[in-house]
Length: 212
Image 1 (cartoon, rainbow, N blue to C red):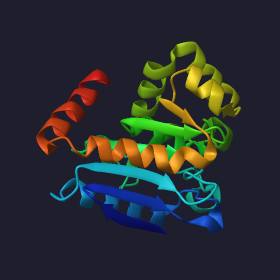
Image 2: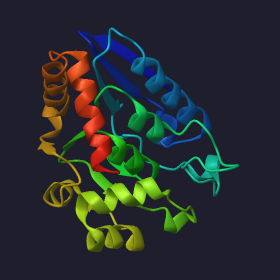
Image 3: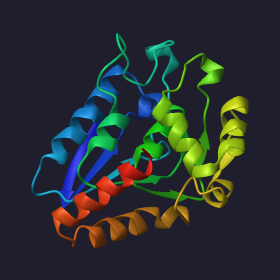
Image 4: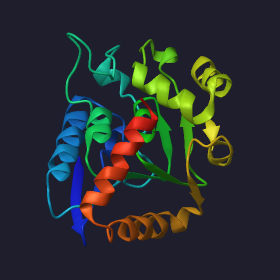
């Protein structure tokens, strides 16, 4: 379902639920939430790198498993939201995206501090198409990153946004060739991990203030 590989103060979390194209379901969401919480309190880890095996990031909602269940924790709603865990994590979290990030996958993208994508990546907000209401944090971050008009276009059409356009719209911070994604994302993660943990934590906290 997922693996955690620690390399020189970087925790690499790889989602590998390939039987559902990396789509979210209850156990994957819970496992990712718990993995983020675990590395957040691990003193040997300074940076977290989140990626998906092969094509998926994860892709998004597994509608068959989740039904119309919202992704965001609310009163009476589901727990173990990995996006919330990423936002609360004291360490910077980098997303490296090779394929599609849809709905729940896009929520994870928005929660991360740095987003690196290959030219094969694509993004879509399909919450409305499957009758799922996105949480307020999702909408707030999407609007702050790309603006109201573009956020409305993504959310109200559900259309895919290709990697080049996502980069132009500032949804992602860096674009790479597919065969360079792992190298670039690992290099950035290890460069960041050279900084003191306290400095990284303070800078991460400032990111939270920017979205307040």
